[in-house]
Image: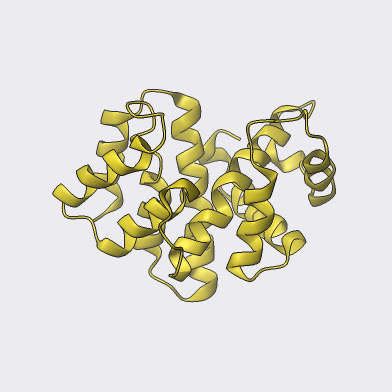
Length: 183
């Protein structure tokens, strides 16, 4: 398991630039958390990178992420990674027991929401986004309506982090990698 192989798989299965960007953002956030928490950065990063790789081919529940899980298993990806990916979709009823699974769930929707917040800024840059603006947008149910506010809030709770601190941490990780992410 390495990032280069994961990128090849991602590019083979995912043509949408916005979906690729989303997975790169989640990878960035998970790598930052892995470093902070003394966890396996490559495992966490590749998990974030591949968590939605099958979404274009199998956008409907429960096919996503179950079909992708089969592919990852065939390719020899770890059970820990595959279980975390299955758990990021609550409808699979796969318990998020590992720290990795909790981190993936906590970062997934939040990353998408932060990118949406950056796109409505005049300069369209993540560097212009602040925690206060993210929290304000979370209250606006019409903004980025496909993003589950419950998943963002419950994700932080499950992961055992304060929501404001979590938003700040993920925001900082994206800002630190903004050039590579096109943000």
